Length: 297
Image 1 (cartoon, rainbow, N blue to C red):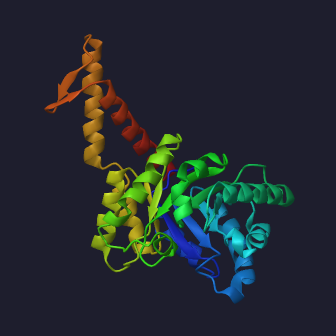
Image 2: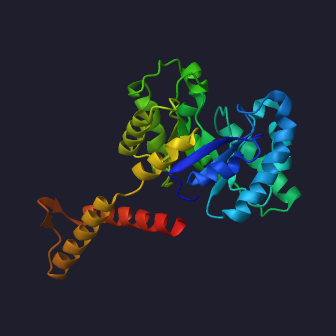
Image 3: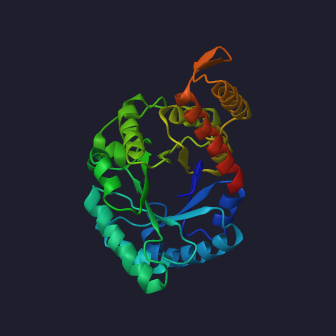
């Protein structure tokens, strides 16, 4: 999975909108065949999405391209996959999952259509949105259900499926979903995966609120946001990138420790802070993320 600080939803039936999404600077896009597409336009949207994947993949190979298919329980997921499993696709979002069985079913469908449509078997990933109480209660099992599962998307927005399923009352501060999002984050990292997603901030015009939401999410440990508006992309990209000040600090920390280590010392004070090997490992992780983002640009 590519490191994606920002993953922007695009209604699948809107021709030309994927190009606008890529122009926003998003690290990835989600072409939506589910809730953003009217029922009578689903079939038309599949063709538009397939064409969009080919076009965006050719022009912007660095961008992650995902499709949110319709839920398995609708009976439409197979029709979606038949059309949109094409070269250039990174993977799918599996909505309304109730646990690992749904992931296994999606895996089987992907395998079938990879073979049918000429893609390498196992090449497509699955991002699993957590939209039901059952999904949040089985984070670890979902992650273990298939090697295709790239990460979890810990949804915690107002008025959506997860609010209805669990019954919380949304507030911008997000304390009512802190446990849910923290559980998802812990499960992702415990599984060995490095990248995790949360979202979405729905008050589109409230950019200060979007920034605060992003900053709170980063403090928990998330590495990126799922977004519904291009105006939030720059905020997510900034918040989930190491700042110039952080890079300078951590490079200095590594240098100071390596100098001390060469003198036979494994603990040293750097800018008033005691540091040892644990701090250096953290610093190297941050610098590695910074270098990876630069290569993706």
